[in-house]
View (cartoon, one colour):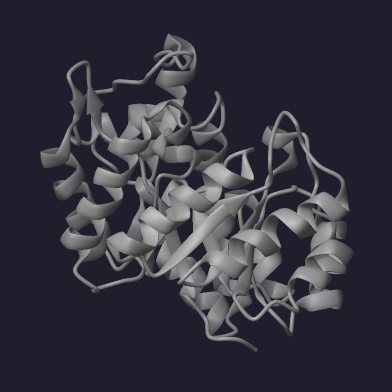
Length: 295
């Protein structure tokens, strides 16, 4: 097994914003909240961070600020994936220069790629990166499924160390673990499947619900890592209604509403994302209260 970037729970953090730009004061407070509640790693500029609508220069600033604020207390992983390989190389070079510990690179979307194209794409990124690369498979968003046999080929690259698997298919997870679970770290990209995936040998989760309940999310993956799956399963079931509420609308609409209600900045989203609907908002807040989060 290659060097592990992290084990346990990494939070895919929101990017606090206002109509005037990035809200760095709130970002700093939110990072401290995550670290003080035991999170194992931070993922910045991922899907939850609205990277698709943040200009490259602001992405670089947010990544650099996060690295400086975290100050090596936990690993910082930067999302640098796009559907343009040359642009991914540019973003990855910038993130590496900012001092990140790893890169999270999503499969190309819209133009998509064949499996051979995916191998060429990720190999080019891994060859150029100065830090480890974690693949990101989320076909529901990208329309492009990174198949387990392809991951097994990519796992031969010394700089590709993990995959965030968010296909939602446990059959695919089982095949992935069978083919390359001893070669790279597999992380759950589906909060509702974290315990099932870790029972198959996954190293942890890259989570959205941990933005709201980092302590509880870490406790769940900690239980898995020590082999206490009965406790972990009970935690998974307890968190499931909140997880479902977090994905009742397109991510990160609900989680941004949640953290704003917790006192972390404005519920500001950039178009085409819009504020949460009243009915789903009420259900989200209700689940937050049930689990002990003040709203």
